[in-house]
Structure formats: C-alpha cells, structure tokens
Amino acid sequence: MALTAIKGFNDILPVEAGRWQHIEQAARRVFELNGFSEIRVPIMEKTELFCRSIGDTTDIVEKEMYSFTDKGENSVTLRPEGTAGVMRALIEHKLYALDPVARLFYLGPMFRYERPQKGRYRQFHQIGAEITGVHDPLVDAQLLNMLVQFFREIGLDEPQLQVNSLGCPECRPAYRKVLVCFLEQRLEALCEDCRRRMATNPLRALDCKVPGCIEATVGAPSMLDNLCQGCADHFAGVRRYLDATATPYSVNTRMVRGLDYYTRTTFEMVTGLLGSQSAVAAGGRYDGLIAQLGGPAIPGIGFAMGVERVALLLADQDFSDHPELFIATMGASERLFAFRLMHELLQTGVRTEMDYEGKSLKSQMRRADKLGARYSVVIGENEVASGRAVFKRMANGEQIDALLTVAEIRGFVCRSGNDLPA
Ligand code: HAM
View 1 (tube, helix red, strand yellow):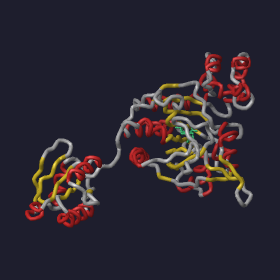
View 2 (cartoon, helix red, strand yellow):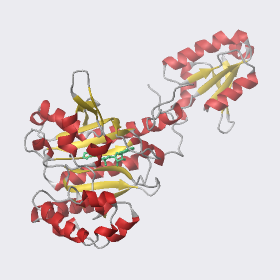
View 3 (cartoon, protein in one colour):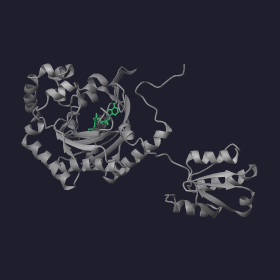
View 4 (cartoon, rainbow, N blue to C red):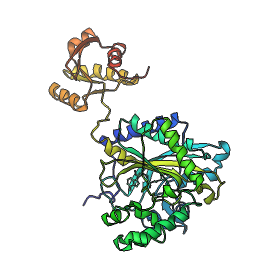
C-alpha cells in the first residue's frame, strides 16, 4: 500500500504554492517597509522554553506539544509558536543591545497536536512579527496598522480587527477574583473544561465556544472595567492612535488568548468565512516575557498569522504564474529555430514555453491554452525565412505582426503590462 502523509500534516501543492508566495511576498514587502528584519530560528527548542513562556497550564503546553526525548536524553519540542524562540534568540544574542527597538519577523512551520479540521492542522505555518523595547501605545497601533496594511495589500477587506486589554500582573489577579466569583455562581452551566480551568485559567470561560458557557457568561465582568490606571491609560492610548489613522477596529471584551505571556493589549483579526477557526491572525503585548526568560526587563508586542487560513481566504483567486509566450512549430525543421528563440527570450527574463515532444499543431495550441500563455506564435518555413511572424494575444485573439527578435518581442510583451527585467 502506498504511504500517505501524517494526519494534520499537509502537502502544499504547486497550485496552492502561488497563493502562498503571494502572501509571503506581501508580508515581506509590508513588514520591511515598516522597518522589520527577518530572523530565522530553529523549529526545535528545549521543551522548557515553551513551558516557561506559553505557560504550563495552557492547552498548548498541557496537550498539544510534539515533545520527545532525543538520543542525548534532552527533552525537546517542535515549536508550537514563534514568539518564544525569537525571544530566546533575542536574549541569547543580545539583539536588544544592537538596537534598543528590535523589529523582527519570521515565517515557517509550527506544530500543535490539535484535532485537524478546515483551517486547523498539526503542522501549520505562521508569519509573525515582534517589536521589543517600547512601552508607548504608539507602537501597538503601528503594529496593528501594519497588520491591517498587509491584509489590504493582499486584496482582502476581511478579516476585521478586534482589540482588548488583558491588564497586567497588578490588576489581573483582582479581576480574576471578581470573575471567579461570577463564574462560581454558574458552575453547573459551565462545561467540564471550563470548570477544570477555574483554578488555573478562569478567563478561558469567556471565549469558550460551548453554547452553555456562552450563555452562562453573558454579563460577566470585563477586564476593561477592572484595569489599573496604567493599563487603562495604555489602552486609551492605543485606541487614540488607531482612531488618528482611521483604522477600523472593534473592542471585544471577551477576547482571551490561549498563551499566558500576554499583558495589556491583545488583538485578533477575525473572519466569519472559516467556520469555527475565526482567528486569521492574533497577538498582543508580553511586557514580562523577556525578563521571565532570563533577559532584561524590556517589553514586547507581536502577532502571528496562520498562513493556511489566509490562503483559504484567497482560495478563489489564481496566483499561478503563466508564460508570456508559447512558441508552436509547423514541423520538425523549425524546432531548432524555435528552441534558440526560446533560449534567448528566457535569458532576458521572458517566460517562454514550447512543445517538447514534436506534437501536432493542434495539440501544441491546446498546451498553450492549458498553460495560460499570454501570447502564442506559430513558426513555419515562411517565418524562419522572413524572420517575421504573427503573434496572437490569447485573451482576445488580437494579432501582432512582429520581427522574430528578442527586442521586438519584449517590446509588446512589456507593453501589455508586464514587469520584465531590463
Ligand atoms: P496563536 O493565537 O496561538 O498566537 O496563533 C496565531 C495564529 O496562528 C492564529 O490566529 C491562527 O491563524 C494560526 N494558528 C494557530 N494554530 C493553528 C493551527 N492548529 N492550524 C492552523 N493555524 C493555526 C501565537 O502563536 C502567538 N505566538 C502570536 C504572537 C506573536 N503573540 C505575540 N507575538
């Protein structure tokens, strides 16, 4: 029996790869425009890194990590997210000393043992960005604006930005108490998971998707009403900066993140188009994380988007690359001429194709169609002798009589809106 891939681990086939490249290129363009540089960190780290950053009692650490003991008896884990590894690298290489405001982005596979479904996989890909060293809410707004700009750049007006504040170690414990008090009166109505999490992470009840929990938490006290002055001012600052740039957002007081390192601003880009996997990108501030991992006491904020989810939102669009020109030949004697012309065009960056197998003219034209070539040309004895041919624009049948030279062909291929190298 032929082998198949592991459940929840997907192949990204050539038809999808064009969409992925479109997403990755747009992210690089927008992030670099905003002053971010790429960092590449290993996909495997010491297990302790994730326990100490994401939190021992989170679903990710409790249930979803791909951890194992390697041959040297070390406990190692395939990264379930990118922030922890990037912060480990920032501390290890003292990147904060090179630039007190480090702006880093990364992309690559992450691993979580979750129940696979549309938009949720066990190997998935994130594109993330992190800024460290700035407390000012201006930087929260800049990061959010960059994320919104990215979605605009790839042509999506979905998803929508939601923001919240989760407070800080000063005000969150008091809020937790108020919330636990509220939940205890409704214990019977809560699902088993929420009851279990009451002692460790009661806030999760606010974003539990079980209908009983949604109903039972209507009217629950909100973190926003319980922020300390510093956190309230910070959140008001974020909103002021977002308003100043007319960035559309809504406040979602029930947003709770599944990782423990968050403080103050948290946010998600949500869509109604992907069923229960509504978060296409998410993130927030983690002002205590770097110190917690043994680095200096500097703040940070970042986000990560799920590339599979972004790609699903673009699923009806075609990003595959098409040849500019298909050269068909009447017979075997013109193949050498066509081959040389194709070679010269390829050398100057014009994507050109020809028939490889000496097929009939009809089947060559079928192939030109299938490849989505923008122009085709048929070369016979007369064309070789005269050095001229009639090129056909495939989209509308328009005919262009032109010399069979690279300069002339590039002339009309470029004019038709293509950005070819000089
Ligand atoms: P997260 O919310 O766990 O945050 O993941 C961010 C995004 O990754 C999600 O919004 C979703 O689009 C995608 N994602 C997560 N799990 C899966 C999955 N199993 N299958 C497909 N896509 C998935 C973080 O990971 C934080 N490190 C984000 C961050 C960066 N916070 C600060 N800096």
